[in-house]
Amino acid sequence: MTQTVKKVVVAYSGGLDTSVILPWLQENYDNCEIVAFVADVGQGAEELEGIEAKALASGASECYVVDLKDELVENYIYPTLKTGAVYEGTYLLGTSMARPIIAKAQVEVARKVGADALCHGCTGKGNDQIRFESCFAALAPELTVIAPWRIWDLTSRESLLEYLAERDIPTAASAEKIYSRDANAWHISHEGGELEDPWNQPSKQVWTMTVDPIDAPNEPEFLTISVVKGEITAVNGEAMSPYQTLMYLNEKAAAHGVGRVDIVENRLVGMKSRGCYETPGGTVMVEALRGIEELVLDKTTRKWKQTVAAEFSHLVYDGRWFTPLCASLLAAAGTLAEEMNGEVIVKMYKGSVQAIQKKSPNSLYSEEFATFGDDNVYDQSHAEGFIRLYSLSSRIKALSTK
Image (cartoon, rainbow, N blue to C red; front, side, top):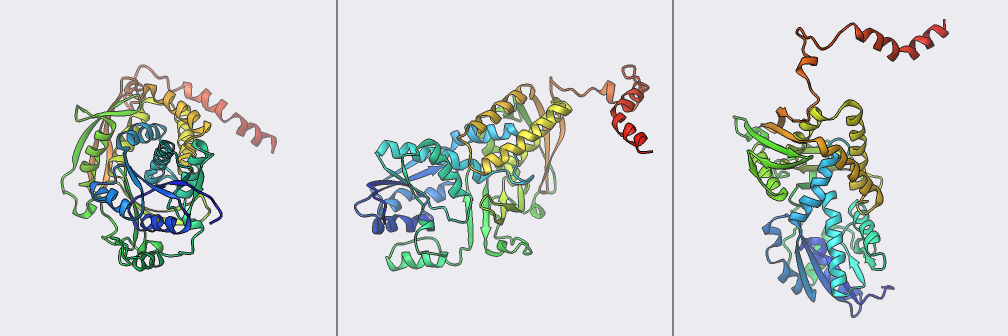
């Protein structure tokens, strides 16, 4: 390799890619110390079990496991929820939201150990390489970035397995484990296998977090969600931290098959990809917040909120968290959320969640004005003048063309 690197911090998951990366770095960067960094973003104890020992056995001099679960939910997920961001109308940004906090923590470890390089295991086809490296550029532009997938001669899952077998390095991965998955406290994503053909229906083995809606309980379940300034603060009257709230809602919603989506999305690199996502608790949160928003925001303000949401969804998806635009959009969302207080009752049933009851002290809804019955507050004859003025330009155009 042409780069001279003395110490590198590797974003390590213990999966197939990073299991190869540690020995590959040893073989290709002379006298380079390798430090493994593991981000605990709620992917589960099974994925983290024995990971330090595995990293050290694979060539790392140290392994730092950093607990980021609470910070992820409080400082990344909750602010994103406040904006209303949903990418291309469907994807709740589970992988995308986790990348900036992982990159930030990786930079912090690099500075702590005096590293001069950062390494990630993202492929050259995906979005994550852009997300990680955009964050690195914003936070530590002086550090060298190593992206093995863009420079090594390994080209497939099979070649990675062969690489490990040749070196007698154990791995839980196999050619039969055909799905690429990414999990955190918010969601789990699934790609690969039969999903690469959009005509194929996902098999039952794709889904791992939620009950099949067909097998979900035959009776609905109701939850009361409390919202303060656009943030969920309690469920069924019990106050919880953001992380505790998400874990509780994940459990409840997953049991009813809530939160499954199957989409073909536009990657930032230009290609389309098909992914299946499970976001049970997050789907409930989005529905509850939308219920309060419907009551509180007037027409023009809600239209602006939808613009903020769309912009922020692309910002998060494209890896631009540490930018002035992000700070600006979050500030706008915070202002819009000042009046978003209230309670929503959601109904979960057979894969769906609906806000069926909602109230807010700041509600702009007035039964007196909206009723189809008799009222003493709205003179319907006033609508005639409004309509004439509203349609005046159309009237003038029609008259001028006669």
